[in-house]
Length: 86
Length: 170
Image (cartoon, rainbow over the protein chains, first blue to last red):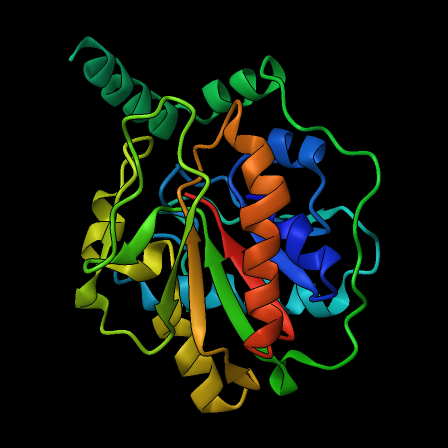
């Protein structure tokens, strides 16, 4: 995914991606990433968990606006299935 | 058959043991980068046309599925209208457990959430199309991805007027 993100950014469009694999992201170096320690197949969290999905999307879009260091990875630290999204 | 069973076991192990994926990542060769591309954000998201891209293997049920028979993956992509009825979307990707995403596509492609934010004025507008790849791409297909299909999607995003792009993996 990071390679595609880099291609889009190279075309002049700012990007932010979710990563579930920090080690891969450190090496592929997309411009901006939000890391979640979630299982594969769940980059936006659980099915029908609207508040969770919304919080992830909003956090990513906020990071897009605020990150200034190329290659930065932010981590909200939400525990899988334990964090309460209100 | 044996390969399919092995793959199904690996999919579950990788899903349940995050450290295993990190271990794999440290011992796998990637296209490693030194420089990081950077497009400066020039306007707030609430004024930006925003697009979604995923590598979770999502596509319209009327489109050809991704090729799962090639061990090096499928570097092609699929385009979907952003206002698509989610019942018309399906997932072809045998390298992760998409049971949750099969029930709610927003788990991998949050078109519903993005539309809600646009309706509330927190996002400028939703770009007309979303794009999807099947993220398992290796060997000779990496070159096709890097030189052809990823730049092609970037061109389409520009033509769509996208000013911000949010990407999700599988």
